[in-house]
Length: 559
Image (tube, rainbow, N blue to C red; front, side, top):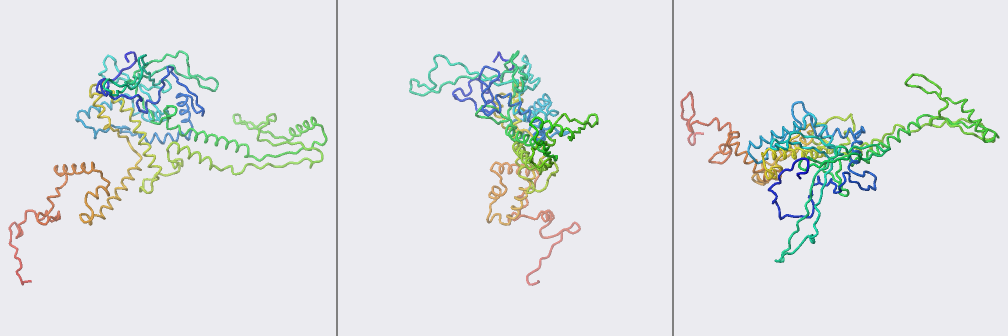
């Protein structure tokens, strides 16, 4: 790896980690499925369906799709939901409440995360970064460091076009003495073989541009100087969608390729039909008698030129002129008729009917939105924004909210990879520490879609209503544990956490102690107001003007 341009992070636990755990199967990380083992920079294969031949063609198709208004509108809905721009707050913040560690470690992680966002200029370019990742289905960043002072951490973060970089896996050649993957030693014990090592690196070609050859885009093979970059020096995050048959990473736009093409064809055919059938046209039947064919055709042309009207309006100059030498498809029909017919006749061809029908267009638009997981109700620009009860919220909006949440979680891998590199280079943590801390690091994105919150609040109100109705039966037919697990849907971990928080708040004086509010003799709860008024008062007397007076109790028979 010393020959490569970049750097290599130390492995977790050293080189002897899991030495005895060997498998011939490569890593199951879906991000590693997009690679070529071949020596060439561009790996190609035959695509029978004709959709794409390599990854470069696939990315170009995705970028062409986003230029259409319908697809762009759906993409903007997704990006605007995922990345919320605010004047004061950052679109994303790091959440370390579940991170096991000291406050000093958490503060250091927060500072490094802010530094990474500054290098990416994420607060200003968050919309463009997320949109690029969503459209291409992948994103590459080169983490630039000072090789002489790696302890200073990241110096720059540079975006790399996916058309110019490719992950390569190079397998070590097996020696001539390699025989069997499984062998038996002298003690008749079966040993696992050592799998051949794979050398992984990225191949970057700065001149991997394309040139036009007619209507075909071809890679530019001239001056193809590629550079090998170490795997740890590149941040590579995909959409998570993979074509397992072709081992290619896909974008979320891939499902919309067919729907978008169908919508375009239907719209084009509708325009052609309306232009050709909108006006009424006439059919002239010209009686040519017994004239020969050549003279009949000449006579027909003379009559057509004599009565033909071809007025053309020039929008540039505002002139109206007669262009009789041009014939359009919207003009009248002139047909010859032999002797014995009905003579010269003029009939009218009616225009097309139902030209205002748009049902098929709306169907394919809805299909396009569904293929992109966007609610079809958002197509209607006149639709209002509902913030009412959860019963009034469409299920599609809730599904869309969950989809955006999955996109955010996948996109957050960019921050995790850069944060890992930064923390390890600055010796804040070790690779072993990162393996334990990674799963506890979360990212908090700004929200402006509160459909899920409304749903949770509505469910909580319903649960509290059921709880209030069950309160008279508590202790007789229902236990507290049953109510908390079945009605409030609290797990065992949540119950333990809530109980510990309540005990701590009682100890701190935030909440009153329930034991002090109970009558020690009867065990019944006391009235808070009554208990406060009786505190410090004598049992058999009442205080009047600062002195206690005896209260005479009635004797038997006096009442």
